[in-house]
Length: 247
Ligand code: NAD
View 1 (cartoon, rainbow, N blue to C red):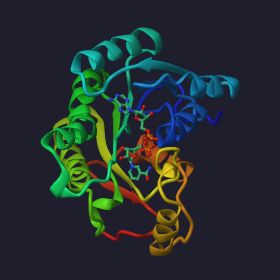
View 2: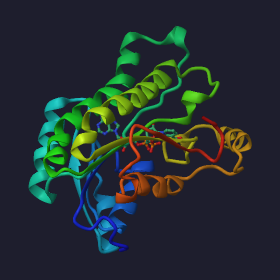
View 3: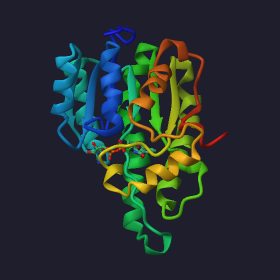
């Protein structure tokens, strides 16, 4: 435990595995009590955190359903207290050419990648504003600055994350709440590793840092954005992608 977030409650969506689990481990190591909101049971990550001396809980939640998110917020409040930190990490990234995309496919991506941020921010912001301190980090993607086919729905939703981040930051700054976005490259997670290995090599070769990104590469950037040190940093997108996209 390093203790930088002692006394803070953090909510991490999609924290049952992949990048989200790395965020959970880092926040818990730094002293936060972490609530994992996920469709999947996060007991494995919770056990790992507790074995290391930290505090985490698993809350089953469908982030696309506002009632489920509101119920999760009540559970978090009761079990680990009002939230100070919200990490909107859960997202889907199916590849599909535009001419085969149905409106239903489009809506599925938007309902998790951007609508869910509306639900979680509506649910968790009031406690942050009442406390006069809060940190929201929304996970976008460096693909918004790259030339890939088959991702119109995904890139549109991740650009929406950046727009939402900027606009919300303006509205909540007066209450001590910052809102930032964090953009990874292609990261090795169980989901991405179910795809072709060549994709990792191709991406690594385009990056300045020529190795595949792993979830832990994002943990330090996340820890900075939710820290007191980042109190004057808001409405920004931090691209942590091995130096690929330059903005
Ligand atoms: P992942 O597929 O490993 O995990 C996503 C998690 O979200 C899962 O635990 C899943 O159960 C949960 N989830 C899915 N639908 C849900 C719902 N309706 N309600 C609650 N939980 C739900 O994802 P990942 O690869 O770790 O990616 C995490 C985030 O990072 C996503 O927003 C993704 O777009 C972004 N990102 C990932 C990469 C990458 O290469 N992995 C690159 C750039 C951006």
